[in-house]
Amino acid sequence: MKLCSAIALLAVMSATLAAPAAAQDWYASASAGYLLQNDSSNKGTSGAFTTGNGAPVIPFGTAIAAGTLYGWETEFDNGYALSGEVGAYYGNSLRSGIEISQNKADVDTHSGVNVAGTVIDGVDAAVLTGSDTQLGATVGAVVADGRGDIKSTSIFANLYYDFNAAGPIRPYVGAGLGYSDVEVTYRPSGVGIIDDSEGKLAWQLKGGATWAFSDKIEFFGEATYRATDDVELKNDLFPGTLNVENTQTLLSLGARYRFGS
Image (tube, rainbow, N blue to C red; front, top):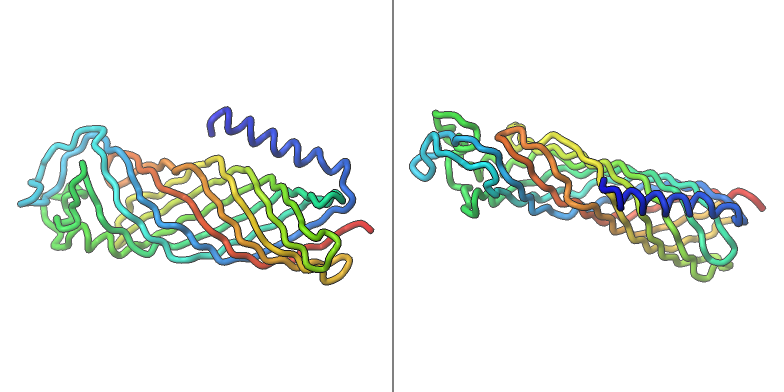
């Protein structure tokens, strides 16, 4: 994580942790949700390598120069999200919290594999493995069987504004800044391509509503949009790195326990 991002995150978390000096009530919450992981236009650059047998389109031993652009599209299935938060109410419609969350979505399929701007879905898959013997299956057929997943474990400092703060139903908006450890596995047709992780600065926007069931117990539903910068990962199939997009929408239901009077 870049120094300026780390400083910004530290400042937000410090402010969030210092604010409880004026807190009127503390709370703890937990939620479970439905994850809509947005598709990724993966892009990367290769190291120098020679191709396998993709003849007649790409002959065996074709030299690929270091820095060659490549990529493909990845579609994800919907997944799950779990979250826990501790925070404080301040009596001025504001509250803040520190949230820890985890989510996961499986890969559905990959498509549109391209090297140096040329789509190679119709070429024998041996072209990328280095094999001089053709596999009898095209690149497109192999990557269409999109095994793998994307997982994120995150911590956020959040700030919320509650509308109708004294009422039984309280709509709210919120925003958070944090850090996500993003782990990606791409194993189409059992072929290991990506199995790596990277930590990134993350941010999120929230909107929801709270129902005050009692003085102590509250239920809530919320929608969250969350994103990190592209995650740069090592390619295990041939030399190079791949940038994977990581943006997501979460729809969650949860409960809050309010401490204090």
